[in-house]
Length: 139
Image 1 (tube, one colour):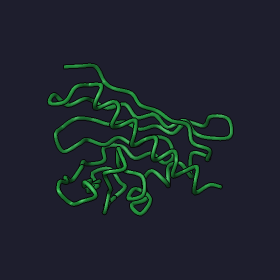
Image 2: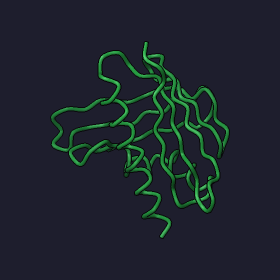
Image 3: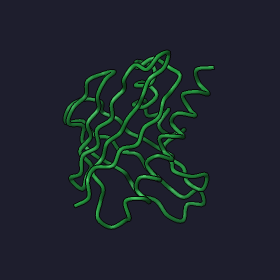
Image 4: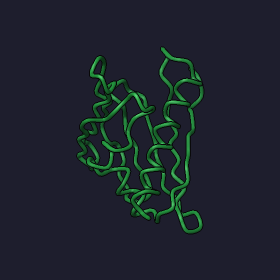
């Protein structure tokens, strides 16, 4: 198995605001997709240990889609969020103060069916959309 993959971004907001944009279902639908051909029409968040996270990811033309889901294992606002994905892999996202903003870092276990580079690029693209969303909403 390949080592964990790390993606990160810096957002111009304090950790509390960065956390809110990352965990609010309405906000998630505005940033949780890897490219312009994709969208996230719905998201469900039960933000507590044992709670569920589900984000529907679809091609904008409706030709393909899937639910990206998992169970929260650790919820420590506004510092750490650990999600066990439905396939058993772990994802850990941290929110660390960084000057007048927040460093948001996600470390996740790769899955075996896609190359590591594709997984890294996809997760980074989603995190970049998140950062753009935070920047736009904090103007």
